[in-house]
Amino acid sequence: CYYGIGSYHYWASKKLRRFFGPFARDNRMKGIEELKLTIEKGIFSPRSGNLALFRIYLEEKWYDKVFELSDAVLSVTPNVLFPRWYYGVALIRTRQWEKALENYTKMEEILSPIECKGPEAMVEVWYYKALSFYNLGEFLKAKDLLVRIPSNDENLNTNLFYYENYIKK
Image (cartoon, rainbow, N blue to C red; front, top):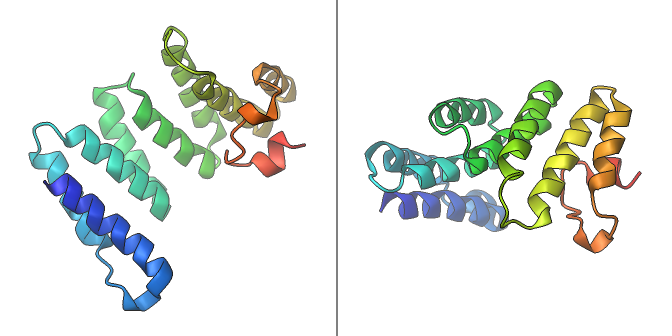
């Protein structure tokens, strides 16, 4: 119950404030607290609550909280992809290239044996690994990864972080 109410309170407040500014009630913190109750007291919903908090912390640019939550979640379930995805985004946004490279290498190891997957996950992993190599000055390694990415522009997600400044060049 708290999962739905907490998500509603946070996201409704977030979206309404864009349109109505200070006239809209700000229930974001209330929503976050309700999601924390989901994690603490829920039987079936702690994983969902954690994923919701990851999205919220990234939205608010609270990267320290993303890292804290990542430590807690990944210490228990290190091979689950979704927490790694959010952790990786926070690492990229804070320009922690070595840690990002380590994270995306681990993700590649997790994804590789999975047979039922589309190319999108691997493309994103290769892209962020290439971005990390590029920013660490290892341009040839970055280029080797980028060559794996399909050249068909329809297959590329142009919403990737740094797309305009990096892949388009």
